Length: 96
Image 1: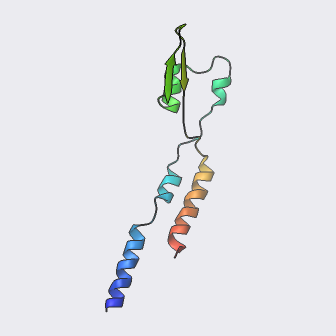
Image 2: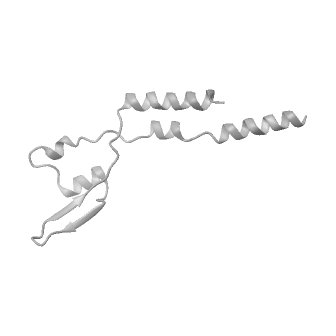
Image 3: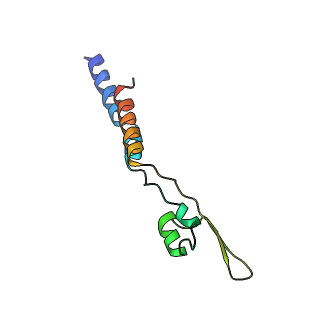
């Protein structure tokens, strides 16, 4: 009886302690078209902040211009997200 309870406890613990890889793979952000930044005119600052998030650093120069550094996650295509999610799900199910 003790062995059955131990196995049941370990099985339940393994089930609930699986990583969040499946969720993270399926909920990655979509790719960002950074080529539009390099195109003539680029994006306004408000659109850049909307697409990339707040700048990591912002420095106002003496001439009044501003230099900002942005950090963002590149994102993944839908096919890649699905493939990674299925892989992580399989790894969670079949890993010892």
